[in-house]
Image (cartoon, rainbow, N blue to C red):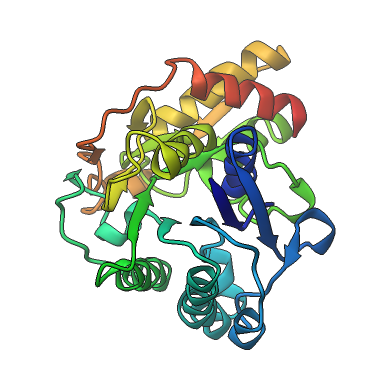
Length: 300
């Protein structure tokens, strides 16, 4: 299979590239010219429209917007998620692609509370979530009318070792900030009650689902696919997991602190019932999350 892969140097994209490369012909796209086959800037749709991409069968789009994009330049973030993504879809279609796969987010469902399946209605409540939802709809439209098929993969709390730490922007997310705090400060500080639950999913799990969607048992699957990790636990429980592993590795105590005000808040329990399920079979190694924390503490 000939695959166009955008965002190939990012946290998820790099893992997807490593997973697909042995079986498929990749043409990688990204902002770091020295690391990809073709440098592209999704905030410049005119540049994307001028691309002459090689013949392809499938587009895997891992270059979705992140929260940090909206903090720095909201208009550019929306431009990338809509006009930029649309231009990329058109360029991919011109090169022959008929399978379109997008890495989205469970935030498209809205509040991370209750059970979320692929049948749960979309209710995006932030610019970040709205942008992902818009991109999903562009992929859906591109595949409509018999032009092809699409899959929108929706992971929750993603973790993995950044392939290019120098350009990584997501250090504030808890899968990364908690182990860093445990090593650097000897304490992990929560900003809320920590009762809200998250499904922790590895980049390897996402890459496996992408591979199944490109040319596997999910190659005919269409629409949303929730990508599952092996562990669903509260933010507080994850902090305690990081504390325990840090103490074992570093041989010194580590504390987990959370504000009493967060526990006393009437909204403290929102999200404590969150769970993510999927109609598609997925199974991950039980020790995957612990292995990541250990390796991250060693490297950070």
